[in-house]
Image (cartoon, rainbow, N blue to C red; front, side, top):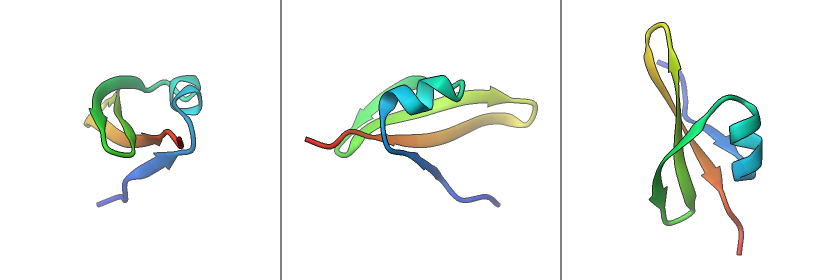
Length: 47
């Protein structure tokens, strides 16, 4: 099992092929489709 990827910005996640899935307290939960299903990550948004 792999760990959860954390991006330092939403734009970085989008550049890496992820799309916004949901808002979370630290930013956004993002996901991308892989051949094995969905890959999830967090895009942190600092105030």
